[in-house]
Length: 82
Image 1 (cartoon, rainbow, N blue to C red):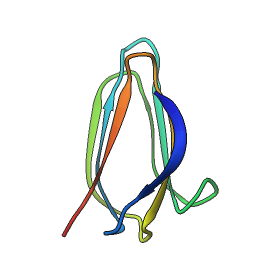
Image 2 (image 1 turned 45 degrees about the vertical axis):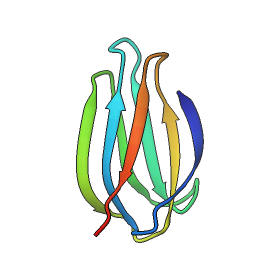
Image 3 (image 1 turned 90 degrees about the horizontal axis):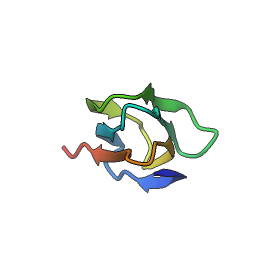
Image 4 (image 1 turned 45 degrees about the horizontal axis):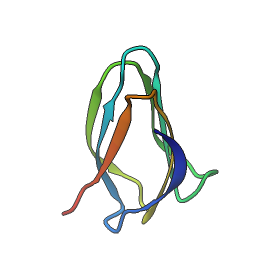
């Protein structure tokens, strides 16, 4: 999976990030506040599966993602709901 876009996060809190990786190609994930030039709130590059738990306050209802993974990679982003 490779892509960019915007997610709506009504609570303004990132709950967790789950990354699947195929051990041959790094999964590169960058999450930004608001848009493509916003403050980076989460960034990682990994060849191994990874789970990062929050909460991570983003103080915005928009989360911009820029993701590159190998052919067998995937990412899931979870919102923290209070």
